[in-house]
Length: 314
Image 1 (cartoon, one colour):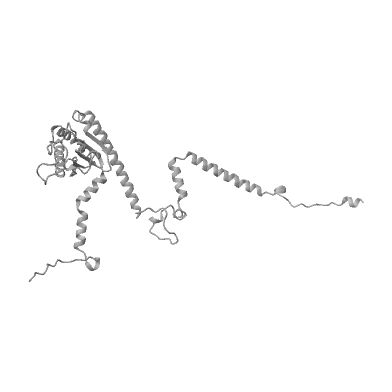
Image 2: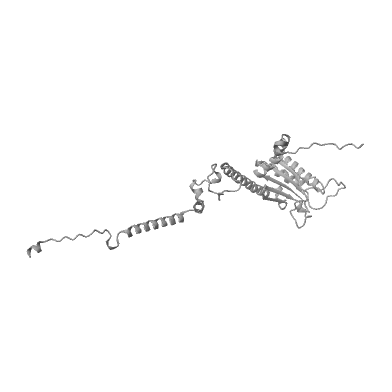
């Protein structure tokens, strides 16, 4: 009996680290907390971001995977060809090379600077009209606005105060005063100007069928140019003088309204000025003539014909 009491029994139990449920829940909980922390971090960043930054973030998530893997560069700008892609959804029409985007940015910068200069000039002209005794009495006949071509100043006619003698290009004294006062102000900008003359729809009759509203409007525009130069404007400021007759009415309802008789002075923006200078230079015509002169009929598929005089009848 004493021998049985002296025997020791050892019970071995396998160790358990997580009790009856194990320790997997701790890993799941840690993942959940990490995700929640990331979620609240994203929400905080979005709340303090500016609208421009939010737009950039949205653009990032709209970017196709193929472009993102290429480091954000559009595949249409890349010189290498990667098969299996198809059309680049972010490619824009006319996209050729990276230099184009640099040129666009430069043009946009030039446009902005040009627009600022013209806006300042418009304010100066408005102030000049309000303060100058010469302009103030003719304020109702002077219109100033900004167009796609530049800053436009129009001097319009009225029944009681015409700008020119009837059916003539002779400038009346008060119109001379306006143009000569305006001339020096136009020298403050490097931009060139165009002048155009307009008439109303009343047919010009002076017994000469070869002289009509087209000739009259052109002569009035050129007479206005002379007065601007006499007032102190540099003569090389003028890029173009035109007569438009009654082709463009201010009052489209009443083409005979005196307001349609006007002189329009446009201070050109740089885009319009470059376009006119390019058209007037004749470079395109010279290139075309040179191409035709040096054309090889067999190589360029140009058909050259020679003139053959008709056979003389016997």
